[in-house]
Length: 92
Length: 209
Image 1: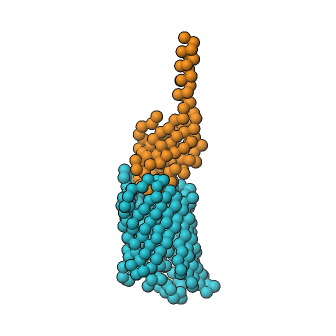
Image 2 (image 1 turned 180 degrees about the horizontal axis):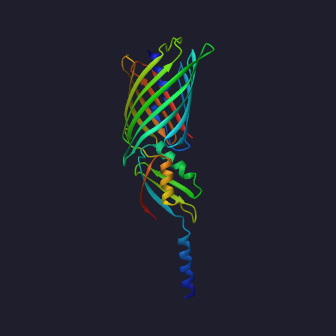
């Protein structure tokens, strides 16, 4: 029984501290200069570990550092500073 | 005539391949060079709707220093495309035979693009006090330019993007001049190679830092 509880705690802990990432749709992102600006803005955030930009699928995927995250409002503001609008989709 | 068109092209080159206003804190560096003229241009976007810029240009007779401000008047961010209207104004001076002469400019730009097609139109008004430079004797210029382009294949952000562009321009009452461009860009670097139907050549380069 103790082993089961310990194993459960370990799994819960691992899940709680896993790097979180979010995929955000971006309206108006049609060129490499657009994407470069967005990438630069997010990389300047201390909570962000990495960012993936797709012109083809019109989204940015933001991977956060351990235990850190940026709110949707902040993401919207960052994209607004880059000159674009957000469309929040699925996150995991 | 060729010199005049080249001169005007240089003054409006900033908007040929990049938005006059970019993302907040964006710094754009551009250089344009050919056998007759050299130009370097810097643009810094203070906000997504306002940028300051300055350009230095020289030909065999004059040197130009023109600071300018650029405004994004309207942007349409659509699902698959983007459209913009910009306004720019600037004032500087032309150094000619050790004398300085005032120069003023105003410009309106409209563009629309998606990942496959690109359209661009601008009207530039330039006013100079100097009329002694024989390469550009006119004091007042009205210059209209239209560009259309398409990408032969769709490339993503990290890939090499290639565009074919046709540019037509008209200066005051002169005849229309057309130039075809091959544009490449990848991430933050862009370059264009152009060939006019009169045999003239052009090379544009830009990087966003």
